[in-house]
Image (cartoon, rainbow, N blue to C red; front, side):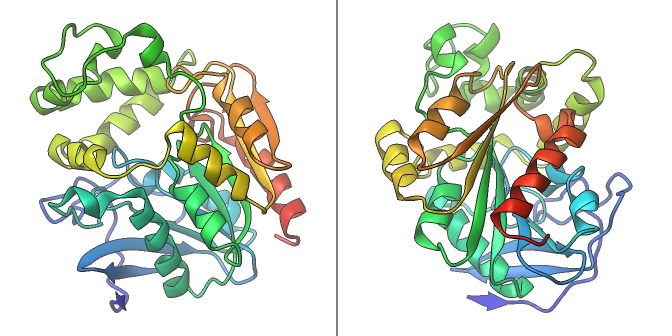
Amino acid sequence: MSISAQPEMAPTGRADATGIAEHEQTRARYPDAGGFVEREGVRVFYEVYGGGGEPALLFLPTWEIVHSRAWKFQIPYFARRGRVVTFDRRGSGRSARPREARAYDRRATADDAVAVLDAAGVGRAVVVSWCGAGDDLILAAEHPDRVAGLVLIAPDLLLTADPAEKEGPYPFDDEPVTLDGWGKWNRRYWLRDWRGFLEFFFARTFSEPHSTKQIEDAVGWGLQTDPQTIARGFDASWPNDESTALQLCARLRCPTLVIQGSQDAVVGPERGAAVAAAIPNARLVTLEGCGHAPHLRDPVVTNIVVRDFAQAASPPL
């Protein structure tokens, strides 16, 4: 691994082919430091906010569809209390977009997280993930000395049927049989109409009424990558199948909190309880009326729940 010198902190906005941003919305809190880590020739962009003190909070990236701006409501709140670290997953934001599918393996993301913590000078962190697909579990299970606690928001661990599976099943690689509903979860449709998929997907993500702004933001973030990169990510190794996920869950020893929206239309409201039951001594918090992204749609209550957990998992924060 090599770590570059800290770059000029240009804002993150629409990216060119290299992933470098041209512009962005104004931020409530700008980073205090940042840079790139490089592993196996792939550069991963990270940012650090706030002062010292541990444990810090590491907000993991979700899948390649959006970058670390998805944590925009958590960063200013928690940076007032300690250190916050974020990074862009390979394939999004200012991180590189490798051409090989294996570069997007979820294990690579867990290893990127360790490299980012090292570069940020953070020994131990409370790790928060959204729609995590096993990289969060790998990080906590294989690097227990680095993870003080784990928060799983709307986990994408296939312990219950997805709404898409209940509605379909629909083909992913073949020509779509319909463009209604989850029929749009289709590689060929992504390549033809990426915006159309984003508009559908984020309308399901934010199932709460009056979510126009959240949908608009997320579609804009999704347009900063491309469907070819997303497809490579889906061809990578995902350890979120039932058998692998259960094995990883059983290995966790850190305090764990699962946050699940009762109106989650992406992984389904039953998912949180199944994941919490698979993790030793995990705690489940169900947010009534919330969809798949409570940290973006209901950030105040989500931040309070995460804060209280983090303080109990490894005080003080």
